[in-house]
Image (cartoon, rainbow, N blue to C red; front, side):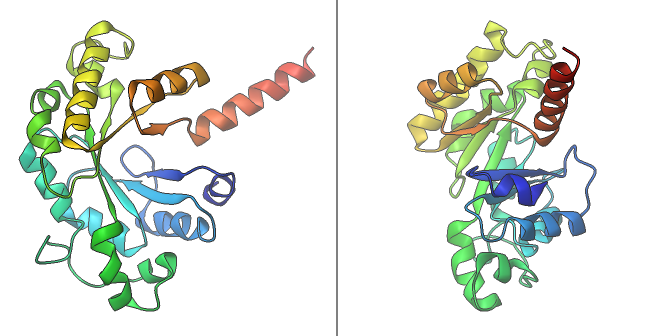
Length: 227
C-alpha cells in the first residue's frame, strides 16, 4: 500500500503508529517502499516520547507527527527529540535513514537531518488551543496540525467537526500559526472541503486514507455490478 500510494503523486504519506497496528519493522518497510518517489514519509507517534521518535527517524522518517501537544513544554520536548545535540537530545545511530535520504553514510545524513526533518505538532485539545500562541513560538516547530475529532471531543462535541465551536477553535490555531510564520494543517476528505481549507489558509491537508480509498473503491465497483 505504501509503495502504491507513494507512486501516485501525493506530496507525502502519513504512516500512523498511534491508531494503526504496525510495528517499527513495518514502518521501516513502508518508508523504504516510498524510495524513488516524491512522497515524503511522515510517521505519527503513539505518544510524545523521544525514544519512539528516535526509532522511526533511524528507520528513515522524514518528519514526525507528535500527538496531543498541549503546551509549549510539550512542543519543546517533541522538537528536541528530532534534533541531535546541541539543538536537541536525539541519540546518534541512524540505521536505515541514510539509504532513504540518499546520503552516503550516517555522518552525511546527520549533516542534513536537523535542517530537513519536519517537526509537526498535533493540536487536538481545547487546552492546546488556549496555549497556541506559546506553542507556535517554539523554535524548530514547522507545522501544527489540527486534529478535528479529538478537538471536538475535548469540547464535549465528539464527532461534530462542523460545529461552530469546533470550527472556531481550528481557526484560532490557523490564525496563530499564520502570525508566527508556522504552517497549519487539517484533514479534509471531500473535494469541496479541501478547496475550502486551502482558501482558508491551511497549507498541509490530509485528503484521504488508505482505508477510505479501498472501501470506496470496493463499494463503487459492487454498486456498478449490482445495477
